[in-house]
Amino acid sequence: MTTETNAKIEFTPERQVLAKEIIARYPEGKQKSALLPLLHLAQEQWGWTSPEVMDYVAGLLGIEPIEVYEVATFYTMFHLDPVGKHVIEYCRTGPCCLMGGEDVYAHLKQKLGIEAGQTTSDGKFTLKEVECLAACGMGPVFQIREQYYMHLTNQRVDEIIEELSK
Amino acid sequence: MGKKILLEHIDVPGIDTYDVYRKQGGYTAVEKALKTMTPDSVVEEVKKAGVRGRGGAGFPMGMKWSFLAKPEGVPRYLVCNADESEPGTFKDHYLMKHIPHLLIEGMIVSSFALGANKSFIYVRGELMYVIRILEKAIAEAKAAGFLGKNIMGSGYDLELVVQPGGGAYICGEETALLESLEGKRGNPRNKPPFPAVKGLYQSPTVVNNVESISTTPWIINNGGDAYAAIGIGRSTGTKLISASGHINKPGVYEIELGVSVEDFIYADEWCGGIRPGHKLKAVVAGGSSVPILPANLILNLANGDKRLMSYESLSDGGFATGTMLGSGGFIVMDETACVVRNTWNFSRFYHHESCGQCSPCREGTGWMEKVLHRIEHGHGSLHDIDLLVDVAKKIEGNTICPLGDAAAWPVGSAIRHFRDEFEWHINHPVEATQPGAVYRGEMALV
Ligand SMILES: Cc1cc2nc3c(=O)[nH]c(=O)nc-3n(C[C@H](O)[C@H](O)[C@H](O)COP(=O)(O)O)c2cc1C
Ligand code: SF4
Ligand code: FES
Image 1 (cartoon, each protein chain N blue to C red):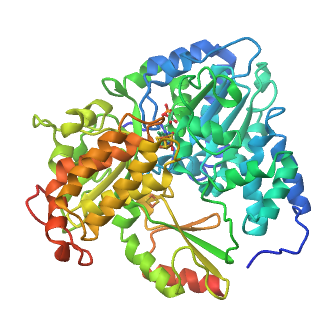
Image 2 (cartoon, rainbow over the protein chains, first blue to last red):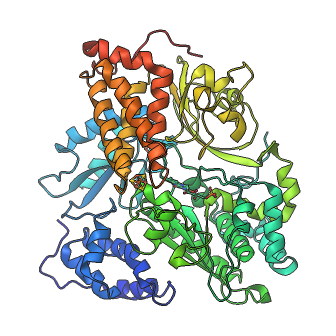
């Protein structure tokens, strides 16, 4: 797992600079607008948005922790539980399914031995089902962090998993 | 070859960089607008162009701009909608990734026209890599003097901010988007007040789609009349179509509005026909929200004339025999596609994405998903078909935002045009639940 629950919750120095820049983008008094960008930044550092991380973000923005929780729980991109090293988010929506997505994802699940929402026992992979990723002409598609993997086939899935398992 | 406005330079190597974009005539619209035009005259050209919103609703952009309230001493905002989450739609992704400067140039011209000094591009969070591309393009444009304070000595200041979403289709709805941009949950607002009066931070705001804003550099360079001369009737200009499904060449195509649907599907210039050995069964022409049409009705109007790729022609016949251009997400199905399964899949999407504020949408989308799941998995009854029609009708028109309608239309249209297929699932549950089983009864394939 990519969490360091005992470490002090604080952005790295580079991210602290970036966080300041982000907060300064919005008009005076509208700093709450920085919430989604900061949650993304936090997830980039810690892999998921734990309650402690959300409290930290609330502190940076001078808002109540509940304001962060209610937002983080609304949006599907934020992981509210610890996740594996690689989170595979595969598109389950119609156009990707027309391109054989359902078979490819069945293969992916079988290969990893887990269902959507689960993490492999070695902590390497978490599977997450998501809706359309705006790449429907290149389906089936999944995303790992910022990277899109398109035109997936069983063979391509095997290659990607093997590459990432190294 | 159709007229290309947005994708004219797409194949030029390095077009994603400032230098190459500039060499191809990039940013001349900013120079022209800021040095030789007033904000009102920019609005006038966009009005003349007749360009309609490309995000799905098709509302004339110039008219929307002219509704913007302009109270003294209150900032005005332009917000670009790059949330692109409507299943079947991937054109904004493509445009921003390959020609980021076109959107940046459009944002500058459009912000100038509206008198906005801080404008936002709200990009779905999954596209973080595209956000980085846009941020790089903004830095380049700023270094070249097209953004920042006193742009080209004109006295006009502009900052552009790229904002990531967090994964929520509903944030494509403009008022939900504004809520999200304010750091809140993406719950659509009641209207009125409209964003033109009270939008972002309670200030007058215009929200436009990526593709809409990207038309403005060409319109400024060539004039609104020249734009209006392209296309057909009130469907002026060109449109990006995201083509997916069972065609030979899925991808993003720029078409002059008015080409025939038949040419779009079969000509080599575009989709290149249905994949070998298969036949056309159905098309969802404008993103998952619009009514599905069977092969004969997507190719031809009820009176037998050829259907065209235009706002008017696609909606000809109303929902009885027509559909909508929507966002231009063109999903093609051959005879191997199961309409029941696809409809269930879409209803699961809408249920998942409903923000839950209004009970007809929250409960109705859940019901539709459940009933469709039951039919698809061999446990349906004939009564379920009427139940679906009934639930869809109860949602339509009874919700705060149009997501409710968007959830109801695919279900209503699938039953309208493919009722036999639903009945087959119900009457032959064993056969219908075999892996890959698809109804092959009476049906006009093309
Ligand atoms: C549920 C829902 C989702 C929407 N998603 C998008 C979207 O992803 N992108 C977009 O431009 N418009 C979307 N719209 C339409 C916007 O509300 C709005 O009409 C549009 O951004 C206005 O820009 P335009 O006039 O340039 O099309 C959506 C509407 C609804 C109801
Ligand atoms: S129609 Fe659905 S998505 Fe729109 S506001 Fe109501 S509950 Fe939310
Ligand atoms: S349906 Fe999978 S990316 Fe759109």
